[in-house]
Amino acid sequence: MGEQSLVGRKALVTGGARGIGAAIAKALAQAGAAVMIGDILDEAGQATAAGLSANGASAGFVHLDVADDAQWQHAVNTTVQALGGFDLLVNNAGIEVTSLVADIDADGLRRMCEVNIVGTALGMKHAFRAMRPQGVAGQGGSVVNIASVAATIAFPAIAGYSGTKSAVDRMTRVAATEAGKLGYGVRVNCIYPGLIPTEMGLQLANDIVGNGLAADVPAAVGAVIEQTPLGRLAEVGDVAEAVVFLSSPQARFITGIGLPVDGGMGM
Ligand SMILES: NC(=O)c1ccc[n+]([C@@H]2O[C@H](COP(=O)([O-])OP(=O)(O)OC[C@H]3O[C@@H](n4cnc5c(N)ncnc54)[C@H](O)[C@@H]3O)[C@@H](O)[C@H]2O)c1
Image (cartoon, rainbow, N blue to C red; front, top):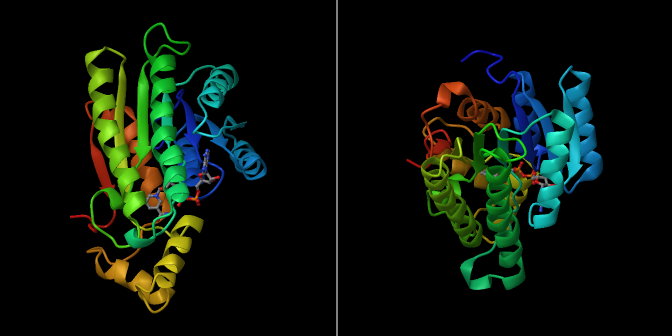
């Protein structure tokens, strides 16, 4: 794949202030795209966008709580105005609240549903409206949803999270079908990352220990690596490069898939 496969493309990355989302924003920019970061962390998001700009990219930040319909409208309008278009969306924002099934807290589960399911669905809604013919951007495009290996395996203490990521997986297929059949010119795919030691990933490892499922964090991480044929945790760059590929013209006939980026853990 060419280094600059996304020249002229205009992207919005949710949850792009830090972690996997920041790496995705950087990889899209390195591939030539202009990038808007949407996040609830204003300072961190502005700093990440400034870092991209300092490296010569066209980049910006917009405050976006993905669970809020009106904020999506604002974020898309801002992206179109600031970047001169909108043809790539990465629905990366997500949260994880660890719990054994026997201890599930309804509010924690509802928060995950709001961010992971409602947030992803609203992102697809606003991307479709903007990117389809007659939309404010109107050039078609690509949506990549960040699901999780948790949508493909049964791992203890993440039943609620796994449910929300399975929803992302299934919504991806339905949305891809609609976008194709209705002539939107938008491809929709998702990725299943394996465990990555971001703030979320490290918190999960700690919670696994807290729930009595591993003796300590190295043991929790070791158990994941043991289940992974390629023998290591995932890295943010592994996911970012897969997003660049799915967003690029090289993936022009790929829609409605879930791509594991998990070293084989979910086989
Ligand atoms: N880290 C992992 O092991 C792992 C594995 C598989 C999938 N994922 C998924 O990858 C995505 C990114 O995870 P991460 O590890 O970088 O997590 P992270 O917690 O490090 O970063 C998540 C980002 O999303 C933002 N965010 C949270 N709620 C938001 C909201 N309502 N609106 C807008 N932004 C919001 C946060 O502010 C943060 O910048 C998530 O969807 C996560 O479920 C992570």
